[in-house]
Length: 242
Image (cartoon, rainbow, N blue to C red; front, side, top):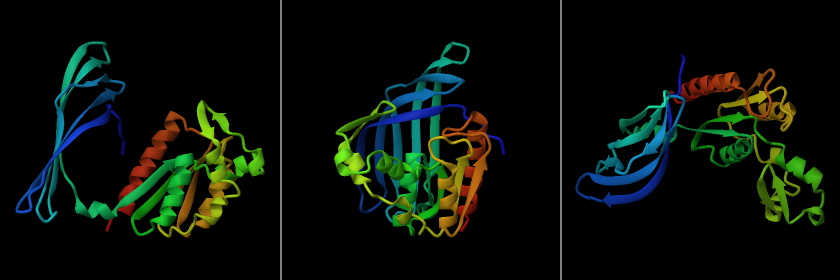
């Protein structure tokens, strides 16, 4: 199945108004602003964007309807406006169909959360998960006394408390109990997180497999990301069948 991303809407919540009704439907109205980006259109959400949610008395219904207008330029440079209306129904079955997806340090966090919330998580996807973080920093700062007050990492300031929290921390002692399906994506040219970390994790989990991407590093190419998106879609679809 081929997909093309037309645009991405970045939403910033403004205000929330609630009408709670013990004898009937309750209503939540959420105002928002933001922007849209993409190769066909870039612009802003105009004032007046609202997401209206109606929730049935017994929680058996939950409808959603967001209406807003975008103003900006299309791919030819012409000014234009786009009206968008998103309508849907919240499927209560999906409350028990949550999958975690995390990349790099987010992959490490997702792996840790999955082990702590096994009953709530349906599946786990890890994109070049940085399971090496504790090992790398403990090698650089082997004692608490050697930890500096601040380290600049790729423009991000990391304080002493970060390094102290992972001092002598053994990641693989805290992951691997998650007993549902796990899919790991890892490039064989990753110079930040060695492929061996992904392979070790794939063996540790009882139901895991690793997909090795030839020629990919820590951050995939457009073709690699497209393949990840397709495999993620198929993984989610297969794991959410009840």
